[in-house]
Amino acid sequence: MLRATILVLIGGGIGAALRELLMLGVANLPGGFPMPIFVANMTATLLLGVFSALTTGGLIGSRGKLLLMTGILGGLSTFSSFVWGTHQLLTNPAEQVSAIVYVVLSMFGGFLLVELGLWLGGRFMRSHIEAAGPREEL
Amino acid sequence: MNDPVILALVFVGGAGGSVIRWLVGIGVDKRYKGTFPLDTFLINVSGCFLMGFLSTLFTVDWKDRYGSNLTAFVLTGVLGGYTTFGSYQLDKAHLYKKGEGLVSCWTGSVVAGLIAAYLGAMIARLFE
Figure 1 (cartoon, chains in turn purple, yellow):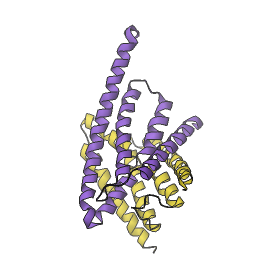
Figure 2: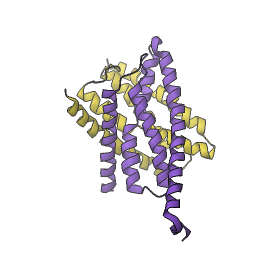
Figure 3: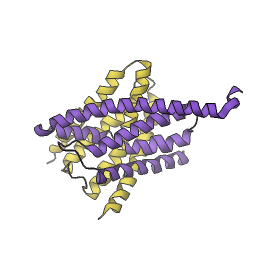
Figure 4: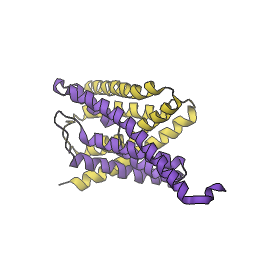
């Protein structure tokens, strides 16, 4: 339990710090589109799909899952800033179009990127198993 | 430049928020055995409520990317680490495969989050 907690602590810290770096380094688009949060969430969904497939395939164990998925990707992605950003854009009539584009792109983009990630991860697992050769026959 | 301080605060807050998310998830999964991803849903909606409440209470200018040490720690760190967009989308991919509850989970989380954030902001205004 202590080891698991430390893995989530370190991972979550790294993920959140990466998100802060995006917020410091990437500007919002004209119209208020929150680009840094969008990039953080889309990156996290793609990688979460990949790592999820690798976990299913047995390449990532329970500790790796806690560090990478629960920790780093959970810390990198954020739902509260996504929703609050949408709320803030919606309250300004000049930015309501951005709000709708932001929600739709985040939801559908995240949907497609998870599927893409699962597919890429599954592909990698299959090539990994093939490369492992006859051991799989046992 | 106080970037290293801000980064350290976000790191510590994000670490704490992530552990809370992990523990809440374990707690919810123990009590609820249905197919709906209730853990992520509850975490994200409660995070949205706190985000609306605290942002309004701290009178945060949402466009100000740099913010103060307090907002970096609490909002970007703890709440950002606590809530997760990734699991929200991954849960949905699993539901999509099973073909059940997709729409309620996918759009329901966003709608419930928006309502929660709105309520949080409204309650915070009572304290002004």
